Amino acid sequence: MSQVALVVIAKSPEPGRSKTRLCPPFTPEQAAILAEAALRDTLTAVAAAPARRRVLALDGEPGPWLPRGFELVEQRGDGLGERLGHALAEAGGPGLVVGMDTPQLSPALLARAARALRRPRTDAVLGPALDGGYWTIGLREPEPAVFEGVPMSSHLTCEAQRLRLAELGLRVATLPRMRDVDTVEDAHAVARACPGSAFAAALDAQLRAAELSPA
Image (cartoon, rainbow, N blue to C red; front, side):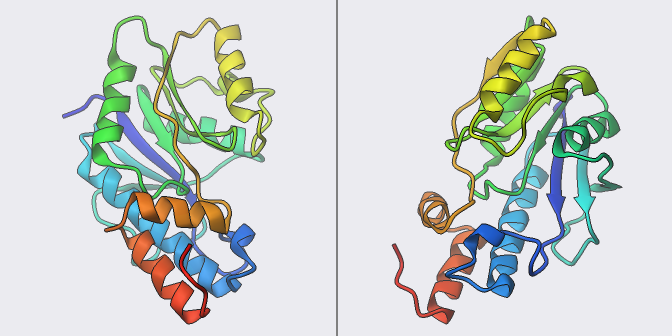
């Protein structure tokens, strides 16, 4: 059993609130279906990975997509940085937090990240995303100050986060780079990377419903 808590930070998949950058070509309802599939894949990966605790920090109401074995907490804070800090504090240290934008996430990659966080002389782990953000951050001990001054949802987010960790004297291990699902192009690329996933099946179904050709 891993000594690391795994935290998923997510919003309930609802039309008009989820994956809005996929509209067009998809409708808000279709984008919400894709968001739910991505969330299901993420929760499935976390459920299958070794963990001290499994926590879902949720903005919104839970649905039938939430499997057993997760502690449900409400997101707190005004911005994403504050919400990340509170989510990791809820889990206690050491903890690793992921979002719902990487349905290609695997239990093996989560286990690798947890092992990296538990190594001597490692205080934090950071997983860069192709768009300049990051798909995960892990801390040996919760520290809200880690997120102070870090611009979120920017192509500079990961680098700014890395600099902030260094400012606090934290030693960082870097994890493999991954691709977030933000645009339709991202959705196609990620679906190809995880062909047996709920996300890939949902994308195929919504492409057919919208009479769009697979990329």
